Length: 591
Image 1 (cartoon, rainbow, N blue to C red):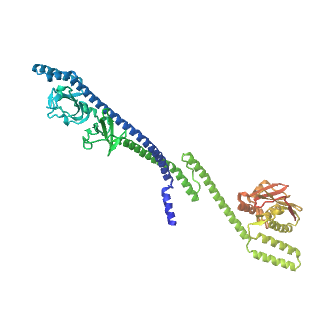
Image 2 (cartoon, rainbow, N blue to C red; image 1 turned 180 degrees about the vertical axis):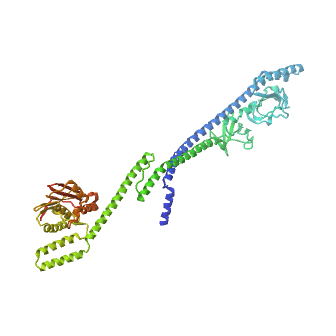
């Protein structure tokens, strides 16, 4: 199972790019390829239909032109042959010639017939060879051009017949002077005395090549002429479509498929058909050319997309390198270097924010280091204060019992009080309840009254429900010590007020002593009061300040309000998780 999961993960990584460079390439390629694919499919479908319609229409148009040209050729042959028939001018002369036995008259008539035939040829440039012939004897009469030997109309390809008229598809000319394809007609002289006499007339030697012009199609093509019996009378590709082969009419009006070729046809009113045969490959050549051009455009577009991806990557490389360098310096705990902007607004904004964040992080690191140093100093001070605590306690206990044995109750009381103060001060833990702090403060005040040899009043006001709230250890004793130091005299008053303000505990210690100047208050807050540090049992204001900073950081506050001759107030606020409810009941301790 783990192996399968690993394989799937590797496959996903290969499919889904993870680097920005690969993502840019993939996105730009997809954004180019997908529209090209959609446009290509739509265009190919539309253009294929349009091009096929265009090509098919063009082929039918050209094929129709071929059919019309053939019809015109046959119509012209029919009209010209009528001039040679019995009801025509030349036909009457040929009848007189054939029925007159007088040599002179026949000579005169022969000259007139030749003259009329030459005139007919000159007025019809599409008419080539023409002559009369006797079907029984194969005698040729009055040819306007030299006739090839062995003339036999029965061997000519007939593709349509009418009463007394036969039309022949393109065949080798009977003219002995040329070797071209022509179309021809035979017409019977319809007269009882001349029932074996026929007219033979063929087109000009160049006319068939002009009618079957392949250049107008723009592709490889060859023509077929199919007679009224659906047999091929003429074929330009006898290997695939030999003369005489049956070719049924196509069912589709546009085209039919014959192997690898398309066939297109146009039918004449006389029943014969002209067919254009085009190889499928040649037919689709134009469509293929269009598809090839579209493919080249698509490849060029993909190349442009890759180039843009590379360009965008180069543009973002410099900002990312700068950002990575800044991260490495921050990880290596190095100081801030000079900010290097990229000239791109979005990246410059991120770099500025990162530079500011880096400065903040460095400052926080320095603050943490400073706090650790302060904590270390505080722990050293605490350790020094705890040197040989058992020796001190045992010694005091010995003195206390000695005084009790000797009946010295004052000394016994003094030693007991001092022992409790030292035991509390040397105890473990960073916080204590307000109740414990007040008990230790009462013992400390008792010792101070004995020391200063005068009586002062201390009043403590704290809500009853706040007595179990926890505050930093030794918080009240240094504050009261500071009040004693700043000049209260006999019958002086010190007030300790503890209250709850929303989610904070407010501790205020005030006195009615001599007060202090603002400069002295500032030095006291800065811990710069060497004389105060050397006094008695007091731990001092620097301990209070360091303790607040260590335990609460910026969440704690300390303020000194004092005027010379008007006393001093020290106010401390710290966070609290205990909130009072209802009306506050105050407990007062008077000393």
